[in-house]
Length: 138
Image (cartoon, rainbow, N blue to C red):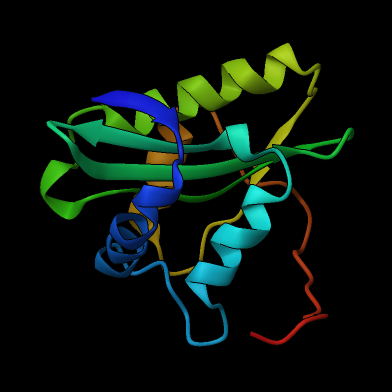
């Protein structure tokens, strides 16, 4: 798998990938999420490509205090081959290069496979509760 920054021509493939991986929700417009990411640190929006096909994605960012990862996914038929691990390694390297001291991510409570994956990479549950407030409705 080749890891590279997202390009505008990737939009349909990335959105289809997110749907296939169950990442989309009715209250989040994926095209708007992409447009928003492209306005802030677009170089940290990564895709994994295999033989010309987008099979993985991840959005990362650093706000000067913490780094964040969103939309990490690998096509269901490509899982278990180290692609997600490769994306996370690339993100961790990018965050270190930016001076980021800690990387955070959110996992939906029912996604036990994701918890196991991140635990294997050394991530652990923080003693914090994630809160959110939508400021702009999609």
